[in-house]
Length: 277
Image 1 (cartoon, one colour):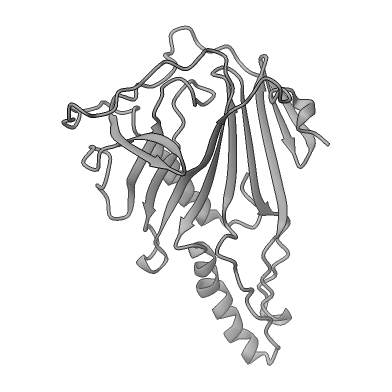
Image 2 (cartoon, rainbow, N blue to C red; image 1 turned 180 degrees about the vertical axis):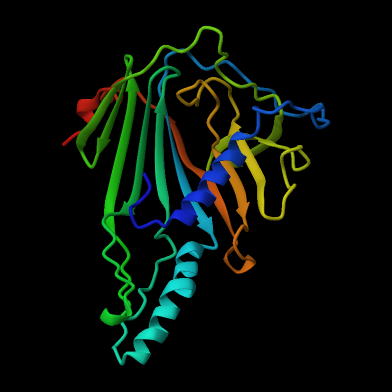
C-alpha cells in the first residue's frame, strides 16, 4: 500500500515499471531463445489445494533516490529562500537505507489468496515552507495492509480493521487463466527459493536505457505460486528506471526472502478473522 507521503512523480515511475513487468506474456512472443538440453522444465507435480507462503522484499538500489530528488528539487531551494528571510532552517532528516522497503507476504492454494504488505507511511506533516524553516518529515507509522480473496469475496484489512468487502465477479469462461512459463529457462536459487528466469537475451530484456527490465523469474514449479488471475507470481525482478535524470536513476528490485508450505495444523489463512485485531 503506497504511503501518503509519496509524490505523484514516483507513482508515475512505479506505474511504468508495473507496465514493463506485465509486458511478458501479454504481447505476441517471437521465437523463444535457444535452450540447452539441460534447461529446467516446468513441473506440475504440486498437490492440489496445498497452501504456500512466499515472502518477498521490494526495494530500490541505490536506496531512497526519490527522496534524494525531493531534497535537491524542493528542500535546497526552500533553504535558499529561508536564508533570505533570515529564518532558521530545520535539517533534512537522515533517511535509513531500508526506509522505502516493502515486505510482501503472499499465500495461495491456487484459488484463494492472501496478500499482506508491510511498509512505513502515515500522514505527511511536511510543510517545505521557508517561513517555518523548510520542515520535511518522514512518515514512520508502520502500515500493514492485508487483502483476502476467498469464497467469492475480496476483503481489505488495514492495520487490523476491515475497510472494505467486495464480491469477486465470475471469471469469464472465454478468458484463459494462467500464463505459460516455457520461456523461463534459466535455473537459479535465491535465499533457498528455486527459480526459473528469463534468459538475458529474451526479447523484452535489456532493451531500453530509460526504463528497462533486467531480470525476471518465477518459481521452478508451475501452478504452485499464482496470483488472483492464476498467473505465475514474479518472485524476482530487476527493473531499471532512469526517466528523470541519470543522477536519480535506480533499479526497482523484487526478491524472495523465504518460501514454505503451510501445514494444516496452522490457522486457516483465508479466514478474515485471523487478520483483524
